[in-house]
Amino acid sequence: MDKRRIAGLAAAAVAAPLLMLGLTGTASAAEITPIAEVVDSTVADLSSTLGAVLDALGVAA
Image (cartoon, rainbow, N blue to C red):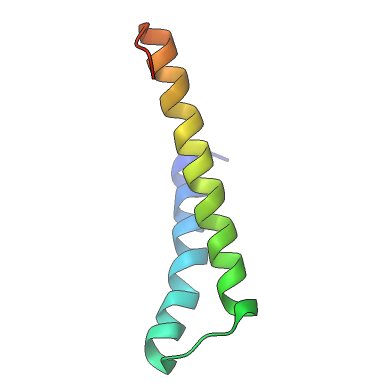
């Protein structure tokens, strides 16, 4: 799977529950937990990638 497709799926996984939250006004922990896990994973991947790029450039992170 290419990175664009993965990013699109991650965005859809976050957007759908957020849309429902916006329409209903309330959310349970069971609805928010998957969103938090996706965001956490995405941030961790981005942080890791940025760290690798900075290391490759010889810049201290």
